[in-house]
Length: 330
Image (cartoon, rainbow, N blue to C red; front, side, top):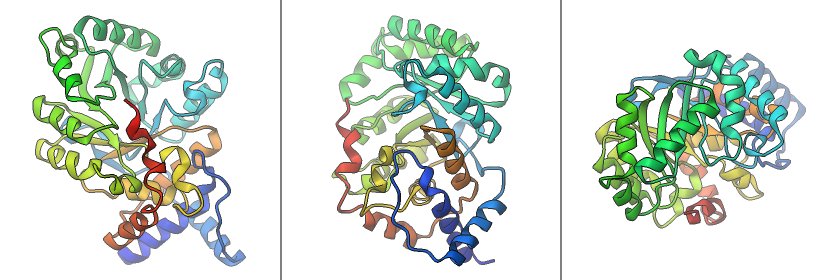
């Protein structure tokens, strides 16, 4: 089988399961019954194990797809413990080992703490703090560990770092980076990361100032058309320093799948994970069905060609503003 054929199979496989992607409506697809049957057959034959990659300097091997605890999903909604726990349990059953949450994601940490402890040795658990001073960040770390029912985090991240002033505060004498260093010394965290979706230059500067192990940034085809796209700026520094890169906002909360946009998660995820230097991504799920469909796409992943990536970018050229709405969050 040629590379071209393999990539085509990935696109077809993803198209068959795209209907379950977060926020996606009924997609406009024109296929014959024979073609649809062929696609379903390919889904059934897709490997049960997701591709894995080494997450930069951490040297930890993780699946290319992880479960996020934010978004408009039960994982971050009050009063949705039963639904959230069911999604997390299904994620474990499907082979997901990367779980991402944050202290500010409502009850998300509590929900993860109901399920993950019995699987702790087999998963990669990440959380975040948006507190910039040492004492506040330390208190939040203690709270996160308690809520997650764990003795340590694999990854603790400085959350939505948006401005140079944020960096200055974090790296000040009594800044949050002091809590990071103390937590590492006490083996409460294994690795440290920086996240942001506002200004790529701030994230790149953060990577220059400190030996962050990972960065969590927007990776979607619409962001390429933004006047300040993330990938050209951040990936250059990340590659130089062997920083693990995790993609977020991959389907832009489903907005990428509106009429005139992408066909589904097979294109959104395929684009993100095909970017050189991007190791994995995290995406939330509204339902178990959505999670199952997204995992099928990840299992069938094959890197896209330059021509296929360019075609996806072209489809987002007229809708980039709606699909980079998160850039205004600060």
